[in-house]
Length: 68
Image (cartoon, rainbow, N blue to C red; front, side):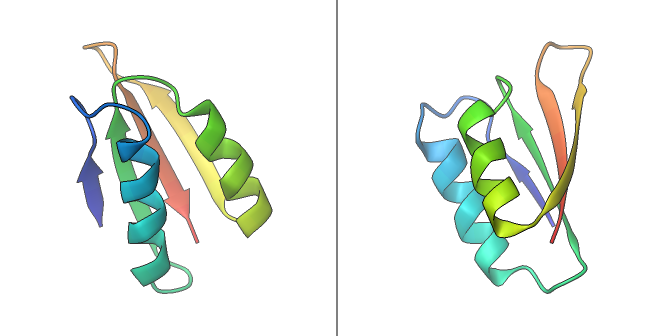
């Protein structure tokens, strides 16, 4: 599953991401693209036991791959 959160104002990217994670089957990966590094989301992901990798893209946005 992939979400493009660019252009959204906080807290919309985090809310969309958490809602998508609720529907994501265990063991699957959610890829999101954000305008900025989602610092507050990382705390939530840690609490949920999710693993994630963040990469900065050429346009300055961030790709976060989250494994549930």
